Length: 362
Image 1 (cartoon, rainbow, N blue to C red):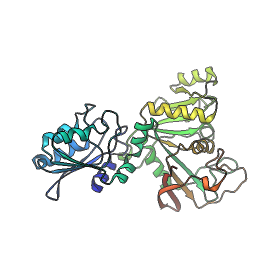
Image 2 (image 1 turned 30 degrees about the vertical axis):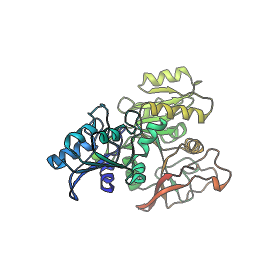
Image 3 (image 1 turned 30 degrees about the horizontal axis):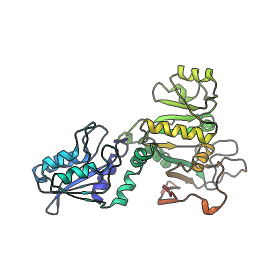
Image 4 (image 1 turned 90 degrees about the vertical axis):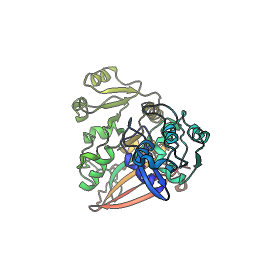
């Protein structure tokens, strides 16, 4: 099952909003077939593994990281393929919460006389499946926070200059992250100060799995029509999330330039962000990358909406009482209430310290 999970993650960025799934076919202790879900709309992991195994699948054991589907979607049911192939036993790491599956896949296999065991490596499987699980059960995307800062915790100098805090190697990692998510979010302040493109430009073009929608959280609809985001909206989608009281004239100008305007419900930043996250989930966005600034990230952390963090720490000191910090918002009163990372990984990238992990949920 561990090997099947290592296959599953090879679909990251290509299969969403479907889940990443891997499958092995084992006969007499030997792997005779293997496969993973490679792209959205394409054959599922079980189908690829059965095709790899051929006639050797008859009487064999299947190891699959997520409950096989039993409904017609973009592809036929995997349960029927397993039954037709004559598989004798199936190990399932996790049940699928998708309403049209939800235990029915395992039930169908058992009714066909196939022995099923559930829960093998379930913790590891749930780790891999977490973004999909969140989208299906909560209806919101997996939120990845990213920032680069100096060793003294500054996003920029006191004048607002931030190019470049991190190394070229760190920036290459960011481009790979952008290349596998559904959207990249920034606040209006970051959009104005940095005039970013927010596109993915990985050195290896095979790492560009999807084209992320570029989103500016901008209550007042103040994005400049001369910004690089607006100027490139015809090439890469841009969405500006505005408040209900935003200027209709400003919204009309952005729409005329090819920018989509989404009006968020709510009177506070938190309520409007909640409205936006719900809308992105409705659009079946699985992973979104939030790149700042401190106000946007601070509100999301206050909301406990951040699921994962990628932080690049440069060995530099900027100083300055008024230099911006990466996470603002209200914050916590007691250190005991501070959010903590789990599953932490740390690397060095041309002198930068790259820290990443998932936010521990209470």
